Image (cartoon, rainbow, N blue to C red; front, side, top):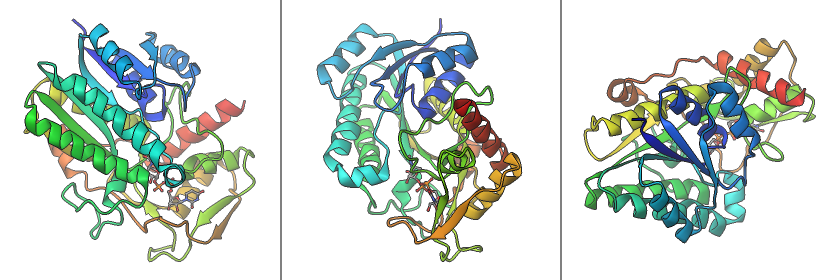
Length: 340
Ligand code: WQD
């Protein structure tokens, strides 16, 4: 009997890639998405890859009665992977209440349903942003959670605390928070990928859009950081590697292999790359010269972050497989596809 998994935000960038991996592993998937940052084309893309169309319900998870109704209707859902959230750091500073309502209320409503069930598995989309600028690199899961630099980052910290507190009183609710580093790239089939709305905030989509002529020039935010080449360092992980980490984490909970009913894992490659190294990777895989200019630092940016992935490697038996060049190649292939 196929296990049924709910993926909220399942038509988003990381969500859609995770749905593909879940279907590849034989899970039955139902997606909830409000299409605020995605489109039904993504559902078609998923179907073209796996040959199976996941169930889809257009719903806003801020509607508590609708969430209750969904779980009553889908009483056979055994696990939830919760991606649905607003995720633009800059926007969260402008609209904090939108972020607290959308990222916190929805989490509470889902946990209220799951905690009333016998057994339930829950995977939370968290972020390395909870570490702020870590004191030590690479960053382990035991690194202190710092005061968030943005309401977005705060919603991830609060979200993790809500889950931890809930799991303390509901032993049969098993949860894992995955702290993503920097997801990039696209599915090798070029059927799904990142679809940033408006001007991309993140580095890699801005690079590929500049390479495609959609953007005039990439601004490199800061060339005077205390790093080897003066530009910021991050841990860029291929989105398919990240998606596979969700399936491995979910299986851990469904099989009852978890050591406690709330666990946290860093999900990165363990390797840091500077902005200039990412630009070099793009130029290498595309054969194009990138038009960029080093400008002032972006307020709120940290100098460097990359993961210590020991815990995910040993406990989950998961390790990122793709290199920066492979991820960049897939990002560029996707950009060319959507511009064609
Ligand atoms: C990466 C590097 C920039 C754009 C954010 C969120 C994090 C997660 C991923 C959601 C930095 C530099 C960027 C540009 C640049 N989001 N940069 N020019 O800030 O590490 O992480 O996105 O889960 O939670 O905090 O990612 O891609 O914005 O920046 O020079 O036009 O690229 O300074 O060094 P970031 P990013």
